[in-house]
Length: 399
Image (cartoon, rainbow, N blue to C red; front, side, top):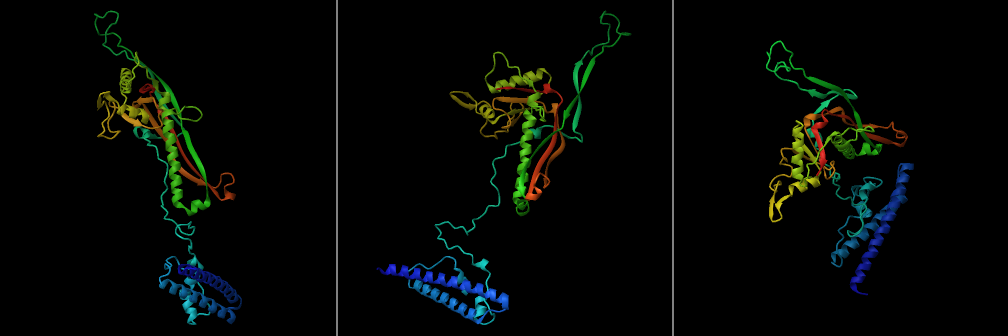
């Protein structure tokens, strides 16, 4: 047997002896604690046994240190064992010097990791990053450009002009244009109105959480609240744009918009289509100031080049922000809420958002069996209406 093998075996024997001595020591400590609880002091026999166990641990440790000092083995650099921790403790020193009748150490300080660095280490806590890596949030910008007003009702009413017959003109006798202009009836115009109503819609969702999570993890609770609020705003943008107006939904701008009539022959360039749509709105006396596009369509517009042999961009500028430049004077609203291949163009003065209740978070244990299961229901809710004063102020079509 080689010398190195003997050293390894000797160290293994010493570590086994120390482990056995530690186990024996722990058993004696437990026995002495029970004796103290019953008789307020430990028996002499237990004290003697404790001394013997401590001596065995110390002897094995000294032999192991001597073995390491010979240079035959690498010094032990890991955490100390329970026994090593104990014999180096102040409690043990007090006992040895007769200052206490029993040596006692809080075992929480002796919980160690004896696994090698290359193996699983269940007792080692990794560095916990105190933030949560969330999925990306969609840019929500439609509300930012629309007028917003508060309301205290569950119904918004407004008066919509149906028709205006404009007969303004000079005072004269229409039957005899060359006759005197005095003592004749002045021109009469006409206006008709309709009272329109828009219901306030409730947008809401909820999730269940345990009371322990709510009480023990305020950071997680704050995160949940933020995600619930974001979920409301995400659904709100979709509703403002494409709500169907039935089944408790908002009538979205695109749903109520006037359909764009393509030029004949039909245009194929997105930039030309958008300019033609602006003309259609201007003919109807409206002045659109924004356009809602899908990111795919916005990319196609910005990357369009002069020709196959000319790398100059028709509209896009790589030196500027991808949202910096208006398109034909229209503010671009680029969002995944819009369907690819579809656009909405409009005048922000033609509509208004009415907030009955802004997004709020509520918690309750009154939902079903929450109370008896220690569960909490977290609810996010808002109430909103969208009034489209003039549907002609909005145009939608395909690119």
